[in-house]
Image (cartoon, rainbow, N blue to C red):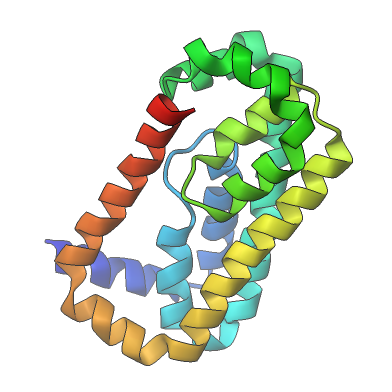
Amino acid sequence: MLQRLYDWTMGLAGHRHALWALFVVSFVESSVFPIPPDVLVIPMVLAARERAWKIAFVCTVASVLGGLAGYGIGYFLYETVGRPIVDFYGYTDKFGAFQDSYNEWGAWIVAGAGLTPFPYKVITIASGVTALDPVTFTVASVLSRGLRFYLEAGLLWRYGPPIRSFVENNLAKLTTLFFILLLGGFLMVRFVM
């Protein structure tokens, strides 16, 4: 079953509407959706290495725009929309203390979340709640998300065929590792922050 899902994803990655799907996933991941866009970026670049830079560009732009939507949720809709999302990730208890020092380190926090598996949507909403300077937020988002997706696309472009073979030969192990890392990001939000 896992192999069929992989084959389907690889087929979808080469579809003419794949960039639009990537745009939508990248946008909503930055504000509410729990699955990172890397699950589409990786097979899309492996399926069409010549489009690596375009894929990274679309993912970066959509992610930053989605981050601005998350900022808007925090700034304008925290009580009605933002708080339930923060509650969903188990961050409510420590959120007040987090707000107090957030703006001092805001650019670094946004950049760190943009580069790592940490759930970026928590940071986008927190940035709006604490009214982090929008220019600081946007610049940190563009730099960190761009670095992440362009580096990922560049590595896949450069080492694509061996990586594709490695993925296909170790699909079950890599899937398990992906979900462990994803769960680890959520646990980090819940218990460390």
